[in-house]
Amino acid sequence: MSNQLGGKAAIAGIGATEFSKASGRSEMSLAVEAVTAALADAGIDPGEVDGLSTYTMDHNNETEVFRNIGGRNLKFFSRVHFGGGAACGPVMQAAMAVAAGVADVVVCYRALNCRSSYRLGSGTPPPSVTPAEAALYAWYMPYGLVSPASWVAIAAQRYMHEHGATSEDFGRITVACRKHAANNPNAWFYQKPITLEEHQASRWIVEPLRLLDCCQETDGGAAVVVTSLERARKLKQRPAVIRAAAQGAAADQHMMTSYYRDDISALPEMRLVADQLYAQAGIGPDQVSAAIFYDHFTPFVLPQIEAFGFCAPGQARHFIRDGAIEIGGRLPINTHGGQLGEGYIHGMNGVCEAVRLVRGTSVNQVADTRNVVVTAGTGVPTGGLILSGD
Image (cartoon, rainbow, N blue to C red):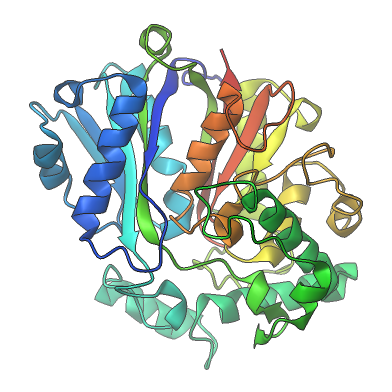
């Protein structure tokens, strides 16, 4: 694969609001706060922004965000579909715009009142779902599966059957993420670690998912600033180089209900993304220092570990034992606490944490960080990044 993207752009600034259950503010206010914080972090004047990229599910109009931050000339704007699967997509599109010379400073943002206004886990379609999409769901979705948790439960049950995984294996993901969140003052679950016993005692949501297997529903916003690596080197922060960026949808993909494949225990779309990322960056799993895996539900973390080649298919339950995914382990994951522990900002807060790891400023810093894998969305058309130090 010819790599025309990797190493040409970098994330120069990150910003976020507080993560809460009732922001008391509009989503536009959250978006503007996150964007201006990211620009301040980079040391870039809002008037220099000439590109914006976000999600189709974001309710904040690009031109209104641009006007509210004091923008002057907007030359590039884009949106990526599929909710959590979009988190790395806007960064990829921003990097492509910068590398192609279409824009100089592109801000990627996501802001939502996902707890106080609407709840994506409720089973009620969010406002962004079009009539055409609703019609597709009517055909793809088995009767009675009305929430994301129920969709994931089907694949999780099959994974358990195929590979011998247990609810305790899923719980080890939550325990690690909550341990990391406990050290993060910006996390909702700051100073609130849990034990595996507490995970096992939490109530069922949709078997085999317990309450503590499910991510939070959060009010908040997060943003990152993408510019050329050359310019990023002259700004306030150490650049997080976008070494690789990819998206992927695999055969017979039906959003989060791809139940018609021969094998529903794996995530082929994530393997497609992993293969692209490694090819672009010219590295393999042994050169990855840490990973920010999309953890909307714990069962999908295990096949992600496998898709990226950190262990053989079906072996992730063994890989994660004995602290392997915690600080000091073979592959520390979600050092900010993830969506299980910090907040659910559809993955954009995970991109921010990967930047902190590259800078060396994470509250759970991984020693000698070289390359950080970031994923976005699982079970859906998805995306990923590899961020590296300059």
